[in-house]
Figure 1 (spheres, rainbow, N blue to C red):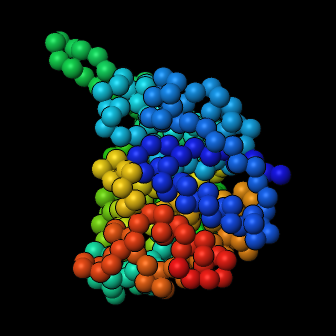
Figure 2 (cartoon, rainbow, N blue to C red; figure 1 turned 90 degrees about the horizontal axis):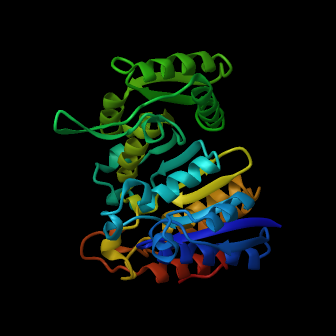
Length: 359
């Protein structure tokens, strides 16, 4: 039996992850893969309970699991803490300890939500992008980093660094993904300015020789950001480093109408973590307003990538589509002046659709 480490997290995390857990348990009830779910603390919740953003018991739980399901971490409550104590450090340490180097962030427009996008319908109707983001290197983990005082002035610094092995392994993930899609890969860098990304472009170009059936294109990150708005349907797979991927995937989320619709999978060698790409949204926490669909769709990615249950992944995705077909909307994806439902009701609707009924 596969083991799932379940970390609800902070803010809206417990609300949305409760819906996701409900969907996963429904899949098991209906004859899907059996899993053992064990719950732990990470982020602000762990800080409040144990004084650390990633307690040893939670790390052990994650290391012993086949996959991690995470809600969200962080919030203004902990903003005054030292950097090493911030809730986000729990998430970063999890990624590093599990060596989750490949982050997959699909940005696909649901036909029912075309009008929710801030762009014109004709620009987004065909959008189906997979952002492949390197997750354990770059400026988020590079050394040296720190703060100091020089000549009476505060100074801070971070280091953007990649070695060729890190670049090659994430490039191979992206090329393989493109082979299973439309055969197009766009690698994003800033090779006109940054030595680190000049190496990135060199290694990606070398790796392309292993995948002659994939069409490779390079774009500078500023141009890629512009093209995502100008003509997003041109992209199939976007390959990026950690920082550029963080920014571009959030931009891509708005093509779909709401960041509340985008799941993600962070993959390593035999381990994985699944979470929505959005944050903890403390301003609406506990108000039954959050959209749980990104977290539910993250469960679908878990079924696909960690539980070898493609058919059940498709069933969860079809259940989400069925709920949207019924016209059910949380506030973030509802047209102005139309009825909305809450977090729990949306989760219940997906479960009802999974069981073959309607909300």
